[in-house]
Image (cartoon, rainbow, N blue to C red):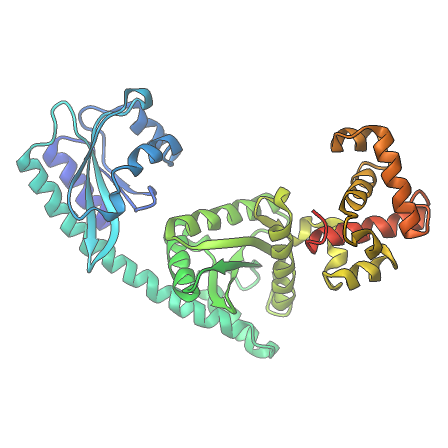
Length: 392
């Protein structure tokens, strides 16, 4: 059995109390068998394998991440929470986790606290050793991932074969490229911590990644055609970033590929999808190339006024100073399939105002946006203007 789980089970049996060990980000590492009193908050956390955000806010006042010794947290009847005793697990100055016990019926006594602190010291050694193993594996995979971006196809094939072998994946396993911007000054360190967390949380499905040019660049195993799994994977990466303290921009997922030949193409697609995720709030911080649809057409067009005019000559005239309302109205009108009623309702304006602005747009463009080819070109140009931040 895992040594961390054994230490937790032994402590729980000696105390006759349930014991839970969590990482600093509230992810469970080990949970003992049930002993003694339990409250609904504990049951809900164990069943869902997540801590309720209301509980996290309640615990925030205790400043657990800064605690050098045991912390007692008051109960909260409104949250169905009994008092807690929390003992930090540290090694070499690093906070590796917390031991959680219900501090009620009866409260934890001095002798019991000594037992808990002894176990915390033991867990610190075990978790530090585990962390070193994970960090070493992440460092090796990061170096290999950077080598996989080499333009030489033969070298890419050799490196990919090694990476898949390390994860015990078949040579024909499908992989997807992932990229995201990383904010802050210490990007390399942030990416290392993120990848280490993901490795512990996701096991063999975790990304094989590295920091490159201020970004996280990674590959992850996927099933071809399983778009939902890719979205879950992106969400898991976001959760690892939150736990490790990394601040990610938009996450982009490339197309699933098999073999080294198309890896660079998947990465290019992922980088573009990340730009879309950064620009469009409705994407909720993540976008996949396979789901971009018509937005793919702008991948090779410059995102500026010149690109807008390239898509539809003269469309940039709608973006000149003081004309935002005209351009935004026209875009909304086109987004709603040319329905004046729907567009006016979406913009919360009177239909007379809508028609006035559409008339101004026709004057500026010198064309009737109701015509098929012109309508298509103007619509695409305004979508690009929005992506480029030229139109709110």
